[in-house]
Image (cartoon, rainbow, N blue to C red; front, side, top):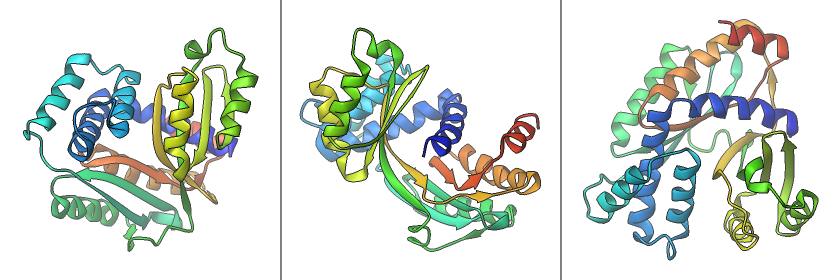
Length: 250
């Protein structure tokens, strides 16, 4: 899991570098959270987490407040969370998460991206054996100052964490999809603020690819990620360091 995570983390950080797109995604999550449970974060755990993620992404407080007010006043569009599953060239599995106010537009765009890249869009559930959804909590080093990290790790494992990954930037806690709420509550009880707390998809198995296949897959991933309706794109490529370096160098 550690090796897969490191590769995914690199992609996450690269994607998050597009701040305008990131703020749009968070704004949609705030809007959906408000419409689902109201504008009070103390009574709406989903909104509370969305605000926490917004702060972790350095989204200005005014932007957060405006998004909440707009959704509470009915001025925000109704968004639906829709997922798409398919295969890129070389048989690489690609899972797409979207938040859209026009599913007809979104599916047409996603289908066209797969088609342009010689991929195939599959039916819902066709990749259920390829990816699993997990809760992921990212805690930066600065939030761990003065804490016994070994003790914190044990507390998290007792609360249901399946894996705790440490590096120089902090720790990442992975838990079952169903343990998202309980883990978030545990961290709050411990007074630990996470930079982000999200549900993400991890490949159960990976596929080794050569440079040509990797480039073709990344062309599709890049096209999908540029679409305003797309929140996240996951794949199951197993990239060697050599291929990853060549990709980074164009």
